[in-house]
Image (cartoon, rainbow, N blue to C red; front, side, top):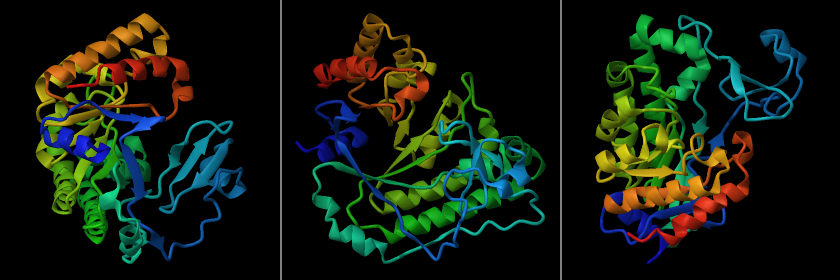
Length: 333
């Protein structure tokens, strides 16, 4: 059975033979870009650097860069992907936020790849929704906007969702299996917006994207950090098929497996805060084995993965390999 069929069966809850793999050296996945932007204005601040012009706007002394929307990001000493320090939308009453034009002929490039025949499960990568708002307004303003200007927030994320739906429509029938995007909503305890706020302002946009993906024959994968318990049911209702959670034990994994693994799939490493960073081999291996047992008893529901940057969380590659070895030896369902 090919990797593509195994992941499809996991997502469909159709008697998959094993847990899915998404490790650096053993993966059921391959990926392609979802679009090719055209007519993009030149951006002299695209790469990280020390730009006097951006420092004058932000007062930030480290490295900066500006994205195509006009958001400015900062970081120190070449570490991390940076954080937004000045959003493109300073005032809702006077703003421009042009979305990049995508090349509708890009589908021809995808068709040439004959992705439907690829033995691996093909993911493509879409844009965030809430995270675009968060950066354009910065987090404090974005959260305040949900209270003081909810209609504008809903209109903004709907604009983003319509754009993503058009991208999806343009690549339908190109052999792509899954649409992947990410939006962080959780703290370590709960979500930072209420389920009611999500339901009223954001859920319709997520449903628009998920509906478009499903119509195009793609499953929907969503990354989100933190504890999203309060939103899981609404996200499932909106059409999310696979949750990419890097901290399954913040829920914990027992709850995810027992309550949700027959409805959705979890695309997760062994927990990156409570387990892997301990460096305790016995604990890492025993907890990994427990996760295998939990999801096996639920009939599947787990695609085990690597975290993309172990160095950023103080985890040695060897520690992660301990977990991977346990998963591979105990992945049969």
